[in-house]
Structures are given as C-alpha cells and as structure tokens.
Image 1: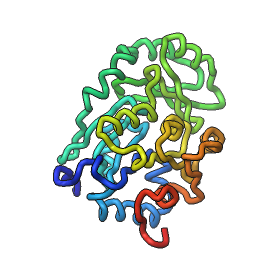
Image 2: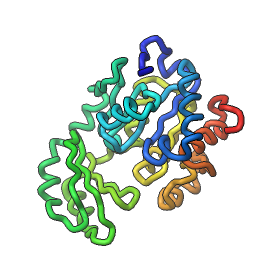
Image 3: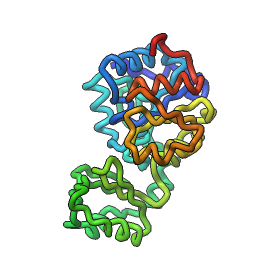
Image 4: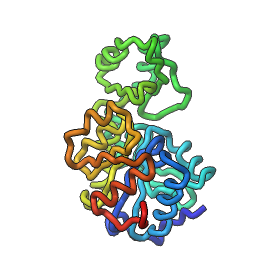
Length: 260
C-alpha cells in the first residue's frame, strides 16, 4: 500500500487538489482512462492532493483502496458530507472533531426518530449501515410515496434523492458542498487550486459551492439541468476519470498526460 503521506507537502502547498465523488466519477469511465488518471496522481503526489467526497461510508472507502488499488486520499468527506476525516499513514480514518462538532449538533441524535417516522414507508428500504449522522434508504421509484419528504422536513432535517434510487436523511444544512468548503478552509487550501467532481444530484451542492467544478460526461440529466448555467462548472464530454482529466486541463489547474 502506497499511503505514507507524512513526507508530502501539506495540501495548501500543493499546486492542485482533486476533491472527487467516487461512483460514476472517479470510478467511472473506461479501465484505460482510470489507469491514466490514477497513475498520473501517484506520479505527482507532491503537487497533487486527493480528497474523496462521497456518499459512501469511510470503511467502504478504505476497503476500495485496499482491494481495488485506488490512489489513497489524504482526506475523506464521506456519508454525503456528514463525515469529515483525515486518512492516516496506516489507512485508518480519523474524524476531525473541529469540523464535525457542528454536524453532530445539527443531527442531535435523530437516527432513531427518523427510522421510526419512515418505518414501512412505501418505496423505501432502510440501508443496514450504522451511519453516525445520517439515515439512508434504497428508493424504489415506482412505489415511492413523496410524503416522506414532508415527514423529514417536519423533523427539522434535510432529505436528498439521488440517481432516483437513494433517499438520504441529513442534518439541516449539511451536504457535500458545505462540508468540502469547510475542509478546504480548515486546510487553508487556496480555493482556485481545488477541483470538485461529480455525476449525480448528491453532488449538486458540491458543484454549486463556488469551487472550480466538473460534471463528468456520464452525469445524470437532473444534475446537468441544475448546473448548465454555472460558468465555473465544466460540463465534460468524457465520462468518469477521463472527464476529470478533461476538466483539470480546461480549468488550467495542472499539466495532464498528453493525449488525455
């Protein structure tokens, strides 16, 4: 495992930092395109920083790195923005208390109440993972009853539907966008040196947050409709990993491999 990070410059001193969604984005595109992107990151670790911003939980993320050979991130914004953590040299996850305190307060131990309110709700199947500051469901669009949204709003919480198959319940005002901005500020990374990348509606707040951004070529149409008029969002032609490289070049953030 190539994850020893302590000898690298801080992210604030690197030329560029990629903050990317996983499914469909960093993991999207062809095998060849992913290899080009991943090899380029590994070859440029002293000038390129890597943050995963995903709906996945931290343990799943680390498992993917160990088993699929992904480049190891330095930081993780996981659980749709409700986890903000540092990745250790041994591949562990260390939540950053200063950044998660507000998230925990906004959540206010609401998990049991949410599960009770949405028990047996049409079109929702509870995901079994024991998330800390969110509750998530698999959504069946043909049977989903959208009164679930009103039930969650009545609790003072936020809901998010993405890819027309996931329903997330989140603390009010917490999602990928606010959390990645909070981490970028905490690490003192110049905002014009960050690229955020995504492909579904749970990436919308990240693409809207004002940082240089890309909606990769395979993005869901509902996301593209929301960001079409945003000049800071590059709408890539290439899918997944190749779309990320396309956007790095379009935003002039770093030199990329020739032919990408």
